[in-house]
Amino acid sequence: MINASYTRKLAEHCTSIRFEDLSSEVIRYTTYLMLDFLGLAPKGLSLESTRQIHSLIRKMGGKGNGTVIGTRLRTLPQYAALANATASHSLSLDDIYPPASIHPGSTIFAASLAVAEWVSADGKRLIEGVVAGYETTLRIADAVGSKEHYALGWHPTATCGTFGATVAVSRILGLDTDKTTSALGIAGSMASGSMEFLEDGSWTKRIHPGLAAQRGIQAALLANEGFKGPRAILEGKWGFLRGTSGNPEPFRLVEGLEGRLRILDSGIKLHACCRYNQSPIDAVLKLKKEHDLRPDRIERIHVEIFGAAFPLVVDPWEEKMDPKTDVQAQFSLPYTVAAAVVRGRVSFEEFLPESLSDPSIREVMARVEVIHDPELDPAFPRSWPARVKIRTTDGKHLESKIDFPRGDVNNPLSWDELVIRFKEHSKEVFDPTLQERIVESVQRIHTAKDMKKFTGLLRAKGGD
Image (cartoon, rainbow, N blue to C red; front, side, top):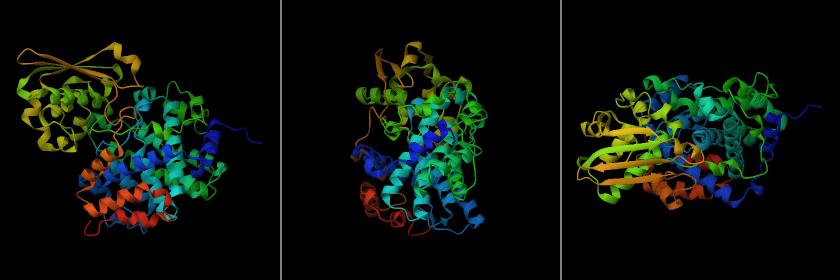
């Protein structure tokens, strides 16, 4: 008799997820996040880093029917997942679970869609896989402790996401608890992702969800063939939690298993940059709109934020004040705040080379100062508070405090607002008629009999 480990208990919980047992709230929210993913993936096609993934796929020559969203490329499911997750995450707009600062959606949806298409799964099985994937990813992210995990240089989107993709695919394939446990064990030797990209603004962050999705598919398929993985890979002596955290909490893997499903705790990002910048940007945009602020009317922008934000978006200050690449700019609080003032938005276009060198943005950056307010620390990560104070050239003192940025589960976009966002992101790839068909199909994805028919909508009808 094998003693039930935390890893096995989590696997057992996820293999027992049934569409018939899911609440209407969970089903609706799954389609909500799915539509956002399907808008971001085609938007990410414009990036050179995405195009290089496509070039690799062509050179590999792998035969398969996996859809690379927004293109005519067809490939093996693991490569389709690699391409789609990378494209979606590259914009830094994909959904986020704030307590762990992790982006689960790009990985989970890319892996789930690729395998559901491959095996002709129906929409209900797709939803079961996605929900199981989120459940796994976010529970592991809580157990490893994001602060400790990040401090050691790990990127949880990649590491925890690999396990989530593995379970999502295992659920879609119908693996039992034993095989799902083995799949998790196999994934433990694949889960990786370094934060070193912050040092030089390189592209590896963009590919992290893609690698996680690809590896998750491979781990599940190996387990399905009977390949054995460690049974306690998460909490074991040499397991993932002890190896990647100085203060893991293994009990969180299974805490409240029968309670609220974790997919409901992941929100959307409105601005194309690090989550730590979202509240300051919202505060600046609020003051800009309310007081019709032009850049030349602003004398000083004073930002107060919690301490956890500093290592990623504030320090070292000299580098954050002079970002040289789009990735560096996405992790610069002074740059993103200044872009919000000058452009009135912080979309991906604000990180193009011409924007990085825009003298008007650089001029406003010189007026930004950021301090740590210890009084804001206790609220994090339940909320991500920021206070912005602007002093105008005519002596006015304006102030705004944001606790939950727009898109957060506590401050969400409506479905209609999300549809507008989807159409804006995907308009260069899908014509208006096709956009409407995709929206309608996502709303009733649970009625789909074969995911191949749905993924057919996501392919380009012309050139790549």
